[in-house]
Length: 427
Image 1 (tube, rainbow, N blue to C red):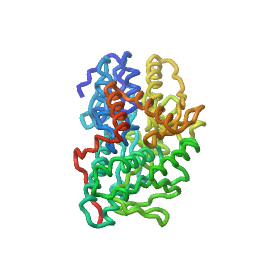
Image 2: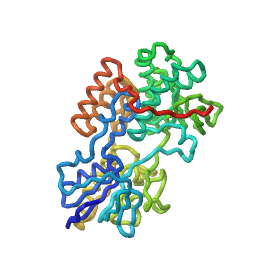
Image 3: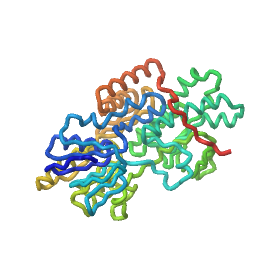
Image 4: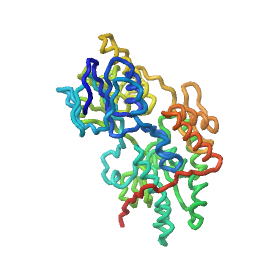
């Protein structure tokens, strides 16, 4: 990999997500050599992926080059690589561009879509965890309406204009709200010769409420917002299969649709070498202690979505969200320096800053520790927080200008089929 060997201890970080970037920034001015490995050369702001999928933003608005984030820091190296294995005995990572020895290793590989073992659903549905996946979904949505213009079969036309979102968490709720606004304000103008009123948006949720991790008030208000936008919410219904044309459930409810978005859950993106049963726990995540150390190792750590830190408050592990990842990355930076200096490390304590979700124009729900509010003020808070955590001044400005334009004109300029994406339907 052409990484020079120095007298500084080498810290290898796998993954350029929220946790990996926060850790690298914390260490980059210290007397350590930091090597960050990722299969992409950019950091993705995942909370806004749904806006890329629905034409509200272009992908470069929510992505930022990893090299640029840390370009002014000495002793920092980035390599574009897929990590295939971790050799814990020889302290090496094995990648598609070679092997690299480490003194300290941090696994921050994040999470991936969890299909719960259903290969048919995985084959035919759409995920929305990465920028390429979001662009595929955007193309598919637009192509479906183009195809709907061409067919004289009413059932096929309805299937092309029907959308089923599996999972009523923040991702599913925000995507449903965005699709509902497209149906209301954009599709009638783009497709005047198509009765877009027939388009249907469904959320299928296996539990008895949406936004399950938020307060009952937020959940109920979000449901009210969605229903006013015309979204159909099916609770206590579990999707059992999707063959590319028909969605079947554990009830007699079925859906004929060309588009299923799977937002029903995620699991840890584990790596060979630390994927044995003794390391892995609920959600395919790596079990770590209060210092983010992987079981049985003093020099191998895991942070972010891949790490499962269990305590009394979170018996199933910390939530797989941006805030725990950022906080873990920052604290692990301090702890690594303390470990190198042979000082005792500090236990990680998660500071819950709340949760929020937007349902569309002037509609959002926010749960803070002391305050819970919904509506237009919550929407402003949601926008401010997301702008604040975006990396890069340009990205903040581009996103802000896009939001203002979309709000004033009730439009989404990025509804472009840049690269066609076709899903084959079974006949």
